[in-house]
Image: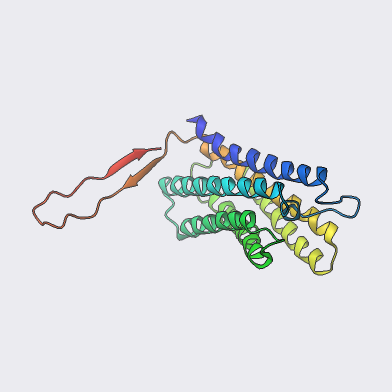
Length: 231
């Protein structure tokens, strides 16, 4: 059902529009001064009132990430790929979502250390997640998107990793303007990579959450059957 393809697109549009709105508010109310230098997106979301919007945008985005990563994990498994790499990818996706929420809730002006931990999970673990997804793209059959989806996903992942490395280097050598540019590029690439899952989700006909009841305590009691809830 094509409607499932809207889920990753909604995440990409929501997150992209959200952080640029935060940036616009920060510039308009003078929280940041662009005549001095460029600012990290986290810096723009550190001060009220845009800090409230920043936190909500990232919390909703984290919810989307968990949902998308869970569906992608199940899709790969249902295609017959029972690799442990897929399970590791699911864990990385959940950690990325956790880090995203931490970045939004612990602004760098209030909890710098916690904010950095969240940024590491969101960006660092997020890059690992898409490295795994690039690998799994070639392990899964059918490969939706034809011959172009694999190279595109790999290219974007390499660009994301390169942007993160450059961001760290520029921060260490105190070139904050270039570091900010790299962070914005990194964020946009990660949003785009999540949005690319629309190619895979386009072929979903449905998604179900399975609940198995515990085995009955009385030996003669009939064991409850599996309950399937449509989402």
